[in-house]
Amino acid sequence: MPDLLATLSIALGSSLVVAGLGLIVLGGRLRGRSVTVHIVVLLVMTVLAVLAGIVSAAVGMFISNHDLHVLVVVVTTAGAVSLVAGLWAGRRLARASMWQAEARERERQAEASRRELVAWVSHDLRTPLAGLRAMAEALEDGVVDDPETVADYHHRIRVEADHMAELVDDLFELSRINAGALRLTTAAVSLGDVVSDAVESVAPLAAVAGVKLVAPDGDWPTVAGSEPELGRIVGNLLRNAIRYTPADGTITVTGGREPSGGWLAVSDSCGGIPDADLPRVFDVAFRGAPARTPEKEVNGGLGLAIVRGLVEAHHGQVSVANVGAGCRFEVHLPGA
Image 1: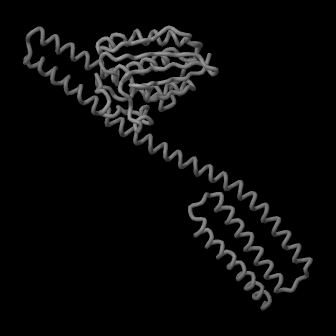
Image 2: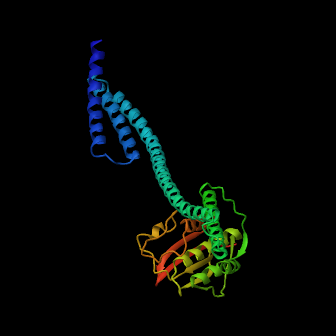
Image 3: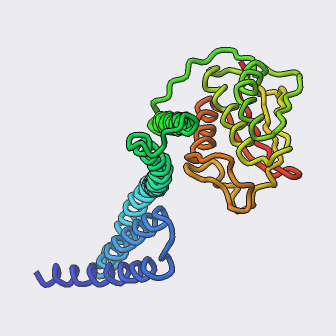
């Protein structure tokens, strides 16, 4: 019994010394290091603590060198296996930890975007609803009764209703994109036809704004995509350019082929976007800096966010850069 207590004391003392040193290293020099490093150091500390306890107890019991070597080999082999397993597990834990951190960050950004979107939409709905109510009350109470004013009120009510309908459509499209519910029926689509149709649809808006649209004939590529969604991409880019381009400005639509498919670009003369705002142009509800040309119409700030979502749904890329006296939005799409 005394020999057992002595052996236990020797092994315990040696193991505690090694474990204490390991804990000091973990709590000091390795603070802030990766999960993998902590797990490997923890395993090394454990193996060394076991080895120190065995060796010190073995020396105290005066066992033969052969038996001591056998013990050291067994513990070292087991320790090496433990280290390899710990390194593998540590890397998995590190990847899982990074994924969880990225997921939390994406969730935080999504929540912030949702709050910002709700605030913007509430503002954009409150303004036309207040105008609609005021005009409806004026018509109902007979405040206005001359035919010209009544007709003007009816026209403005329809315009505001159309604006709210467009805003609801944008919200529905954006919700489908964010929820992953967008299902594209892709086919070979002529990008030139899509651009031609989009330019024709926004031509009245450009004429009212005094903006010139230029879409020169060129070697337009055939891309793989859904024609309605591609039309919406080009249309949103054109409407955004018209909104920020001053009167007598020019908007140019160009395109071409590339090895991976095709590209199109919408260039305007809006005066440029501040460099700090460029990374946020495609964010939900982002409307640009006040220094840019004032908008010609109120909008929900969803058009470019929808563009990015639809382009990514086509496995393409969209970017923006300041070029000359304006901006250039460029879309790259895979070939048919």
